[in-house]
Image (cartoon, rainbow, N blue to C red; front, side):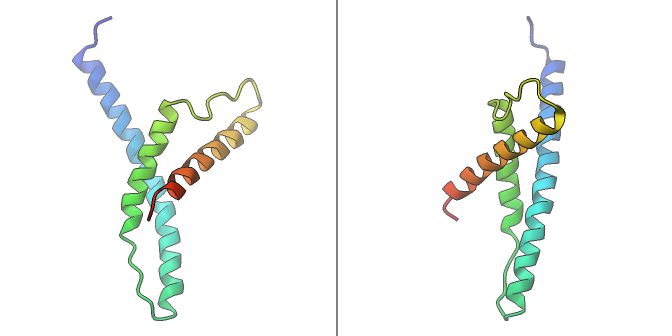
Length: 105
């Protein structure tokens, strides 16, 4: 089976599109928490910067992509759709919690 340049381009575009979608979702999610934290700390006269939300969103989006590629949460079987969605969401949440807690900062 020959790998053509067209297939490589399609795979790269698909990969970047998935990463961008995950990044935007994670960035919006983390920015909301950062804004909340900045509001709470600002009411006490403490300045809080939100710059790490972008970097953390990119890292978590890439980790989600790796998790999907390695098949994390892939064995849901022949269950109803709602069960497979909830199970996959819980597994990926635990996966990201482990990654975030392992990161020193």
